[in-house]
Length: 225
Ligand code: ZN
Ligand code: FE
Image 1 (tube, rainbow, N blue to C red):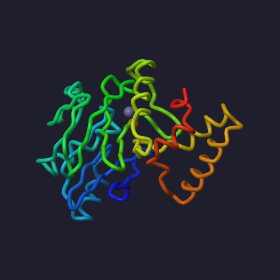
Image 2 (image 1 turned 135 degrees about the vertical axis):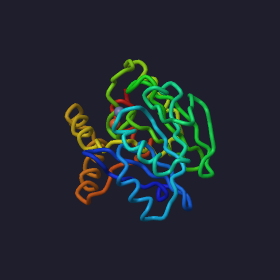
Image 3 (image 1 turned 180 degrees about the vertical axis):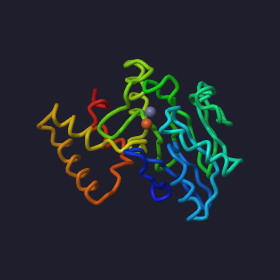
């Protein structure tokens, strides 16, 4: 499944994910539109849907232009965010499921970063979670609107998913997170090893995400809390 999901690195550290099947594509959190349109045109694809995890501009900034280009696109967002994500045309709530690109997708609400942040979970043999700004490799999202308890509960929800879940977050923050974690735990071998892997990937100009839940449980201090 991983080869069907492409990451576009944009702005300073955002990653826009494109999930492809045959000639159709779903875009997750398009912060800007130009690279998305370019990729879709170059590969002769059609944009079927946009998943919005939350309302921040570095996640919805490109959506308006994408709707202009593909007027039949489904924009799927939290029903709690009709004001701040006004162009949504499919409104979803925690626990709801729907089918797209032949896969069942489940909405898992993960509060804390905002008051209505949702994630998109693709069940199946190789599960995938589009987690937005709730969890990053080595870290978690900043608590802007929710409470620390809500964020803790959200992380517990993520921890209850299958260990082989591949997690796609929306920012490339891994190295800075690991340096912070290693500073607090200078002798931690798992964090040290992960930092070496991450530095290697970055030196090759590769993304350090997605990441496996099973591996993340060992190195993420927030998941270890
Ligand atoms: Zn955000
Ligand atoms: Fe963000």
